[in-house]
Image 1: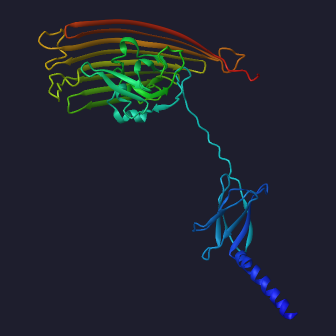
Image 2 (image 1 turned 90 degrees about the vertical axis):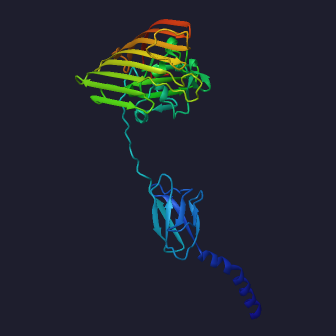
Image 3 (image 1 turned 90 degrees about the horizontal axis):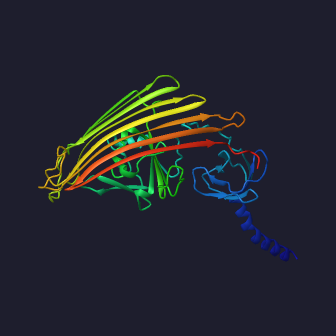
Amino acid sequence: MNSCLTALVATVSLVWLPHVLSAQEKIVGVVVDAHTNAPIAGATIRWLHHSKGAISVQSGIFHLERVASADSIVVTMLGYDRDTVQVLGDSLTIALHPTKARTIEVTEYASGITAVDTKTERISARDLTKAACCSLAESFEKSPTVEVSYSDAVSGARQIQVLGLRGTYTQILTEAVPSIRGLETPYGLDHIPGPFMESISISKGAATVTNGYESMTGQINIEYRKPMSSEPLFVNLYGNSLGRSELNITAAQVLSSELATMTMVHGRLFQGSIDQNSDGFLDMPQFRQFNALHRWWYNDDDIEVQVLGRAVVDDYAGGQQGVSLANAQSSLSRYDIRTDIERYEGFVKVGLLGILESVEGSSAALIVNGAAHTMGSFFGLRAYDGNQRTLNARAVLALPFSDEI
């Protein structure tokens, strides 16, 4: 009888001994919310200064293998404060405290009648200052959306591509006003100097037809520098080894808290003759340009008024070696290309806030813009002259949606 009992005890011991040893090599715990005492699933538990760890299950329970040299565990969970707990036994309960909410207030000033939402890409003022001598045509070098290339390197005309289509399907605006279109298209990208610009917004895909029909592949909106946020005087000089030189001057004056004015002047000159492939034709045209912009800005609690005017005189000379900006007529001895451009443009914007006392947030705006563009060109013995006059008026009434559906 005694021998049978001894055998039974030995058998039971052999069966349960591994489980007892296993229990001593692991700790069992539960992770709960310190406020609600609800179990937390997905919490990460690991030994301090070791990679060995475990994850709590749906009921908050976890099993963690012991490490001989560690006596503390680190518990982390998204939305809860990190906690370090010393392990004194084989089981424990860990209560995590929710992370305290942090309130972040973001404020930004933007004009109510000139702002254009950035849908895809924005080239900021910091990006533009990296190439202070550049024009709009040279501002898209790092943009994955817009590609600029010479449509005719001899004449200097440029074109853009958006979504693989020509620039005629992309609308270009200056402060939400249609700008580069018609006769201005071939050379318009070089008529907006880099120091004049504050930012460039680029949107891909078909956009609203409010400003015209060209925005099939996207819109590009250029924001000029604002007198309220610009330095009183800015002077920029540029020159390179090829003989290109540029001068940029901007001056802003804040007359009062409601009224400010700003003047920007740009001039550039290049008279070099570059023919690196020795084919007898200039690799890039000679050019000279004078560009001036003046604007007024008035803004109070009830009305905002903006007036902007710009004048551009731009000359190009290309073709065979020997061509010069001084050549006003075509030559029978060589193939010359000359383009002389005079452009005058401007806009007036008037915005009224709170026009309906019974409707909070109501506003109205009137935008009138116009341009006069004259171009005289000859290509060899063939002459091409163009004149374009544009006038556009737009009225906008904005009313908030009712809360009642």
